[in-house]
Length: 358
Image 1: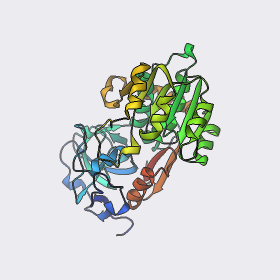
Image 2: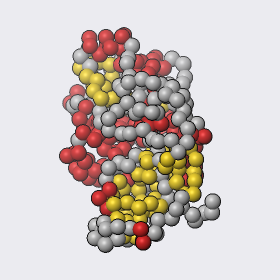
Image 3: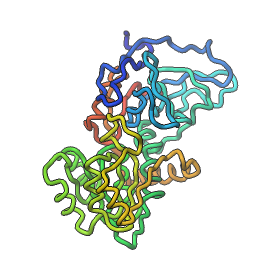
Image 4: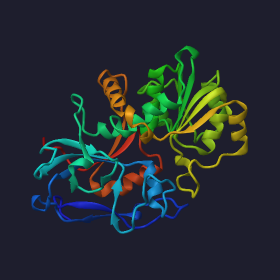
């Protein structure tokens, strides 16, 4: 493969419903270069600038995703991810986009390809805030930011007058790093993050303004969490599930709220979603009247425009900081996915595919 030829990431091996994804599940192959001659009315050629790599893609590696709104990947076929940002290179007649437009997917689907043909209706034009990289659409000013914001707003039941404590698991990840900051902006008095390394703990406290952070890989996690949350926990933004969430829920106050955003701790296990929880945890939820609601951002399309406007305002004002881990080159997409599933990213995991022309 030469540097300039078109490339696509292909799915070539299922890890098994209970298996751990490895780099050899993916291959990067040459593919035909799209040309203006093949475009039909309303179509355009898109150049990928950044690809989004998301934990939710793990379920698409199985024969069944377990949900009805996303389909599994087919073996030996090009991969369609859950987000990307790109630039329009060419347009056909009656295309609603123009050459040079910055676009993202209208339906959350983006091919893992350097260049591809798309209908204009499958794309939506993006206007960047001043001096921002196009990647911020994937790391904050898109579905990741909306998931964090609307999860907090719709399911958190935050009341600034109650001086509530918010705990975020997976707090150094894409959603978690934003959710903790948003919880503060929405009125939580104390914000505590849970993550997987001392380095990430330092980032949460020193860069993102969390009051405290707990490394779940160290001993005495329950004791450290209790020391960080002396008045108990009122709101829990749950990105991981598993044992970490059992510990958090055991320390929650009456009438608390669990925002069920993700369950990455069990994504490599063949379980329904949401996965079952221990009886002791369920008893705590019932006895303390803790609300534990699954949150799916696509259920709130009427709030997208206002949510994106608010996120953009916070970013411009410096009140919301965005973290990214960027791998360079489409051929490194598989490795980046594996690294993300093993917690090696801080903030949003992205693939940089190309520079923007315009």
